[in-house]
Image (cartoon, rainbow, N blue to C red; front, side):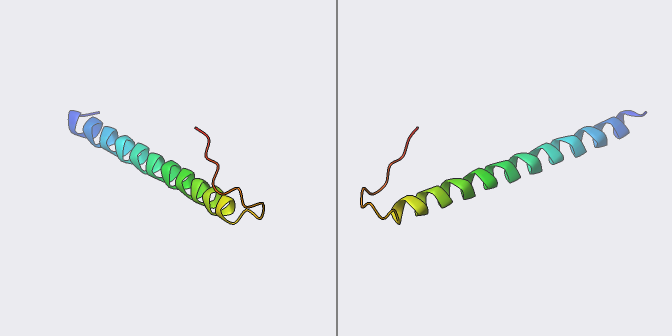
Length: 52
């Protein structure tokens, strides 16, 4: 395999890793927002409870 081919394969792997990370972060963001809005609408009136 030539150096150029190796470079192209490496770049493809890096792009895939970035896409996977972006997708993972977007999923976490959506989960957080769902929990946030559910807590805002909590009927017991305690408001927002966030845990780190």
